[in-house]
Image 1: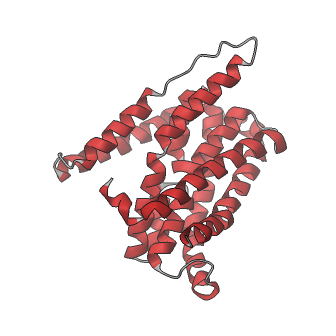
Image 2: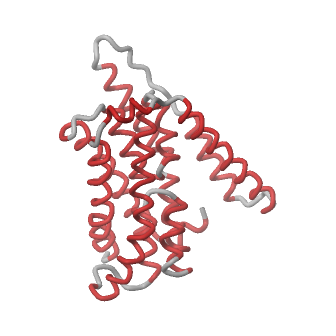
Length: 258
């Protein structure tokens, strides 16, 4: 948490605006324009606006989504997140001429961290620009990741309220307790009480468990269900990706001027 100061208040504001705008756009376009099921739109929005597949998996129990909906959402994150790895270094070089954003690598790093889907994708995209960009990009991205907990709590309240409006459904607030655990772990880790070697082992275990969760998700999903979803989820994710790239640049430019 001590590293958050390196991106400043502006970095936090940018992350918050990008999260809210991207998720709001996903919910509106997904349901109203593309006629997707609300849960599918929520999952795609969570993956695009926060931290990719991890956000999708964290959101799934809150909305009680089906496995094929989760798989579709994760697929969109993988597709457009991978595109980001190749696109953002090109955008950096173009920005040196167009000066849409400040040409400093650290400033562009905040842009990368506030708009690219996955942490690993942020690292890959920013590292090809330089170490300074990579450092600020990772910090900006981790600020977005920390916003996952309040996002899940707010989403749980929204889902519960919307279900209470349906006569045939009992709306009960599903408290995402793991979100509170996440915040507690972040706070504990900030105290730097554990040896670096142990932290590295715990991170490896975390990666393994995430891989197992993804494998279990695949085993519980039918390919026919994914085909039935059609191209609409991909179109929604594409529009969100366009917003992250173009809208993210605009928001970064405006906020950085203050």
